[in-house]
Image (cartoon, rainbow, N blue to C red; front, side, top):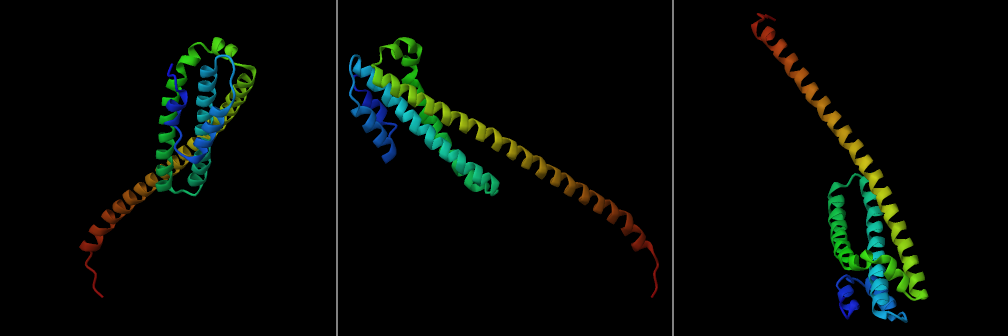
Amino acid sequence: MTPYPETRAMQFASNASDQASLAAALSAPSTGNGNTAREVVTLLTVQRDLYARLRGLAEQQRSVIHDDRPEVLLHLLTERQTIVNRLARLNAQLAPHRRTWDVTYAALPQPQREEVTRLLGEINGFLRTILTTDEEDSALLAARKRLVADELAATGQQRFAAKAYAGAVRPHAESADLEW
């Protein structure tokens, strides 16, 4: 374990909100195994903040999908992927604590245990909201895709019919000997 958990976590603090969360987490008093408690609280605080930002982007995504603005949707998806990548790196840092979670959690002083429980509840709430929103957005996009496919198929059939009609009419008009 790194002796300076705040240094490892700081790489995830890219804005003022992240910095404030880290500052609050790192300034919390700790007793007992302070390094582990501080690191767990810090990492979970950053994780919670990243999920909150991801949820905000998911809400923006919903609006963009409803407004049918695909160029903005692509930008939002890129932002979301950046946050997901950061979460993956953060999860790698949390992995040693997860492997021994029962022991780690039991060793936390009561105030940090309560804070960890609160953070995990917030993280799970954000995650549920994000997953629900994404499932609904996916269904909406799939319905739009089917609608566009149906419209394209109808357009193709109309062109085929128009060409067939033009081909059937043209020979007669050219061969007809009309005098006015």
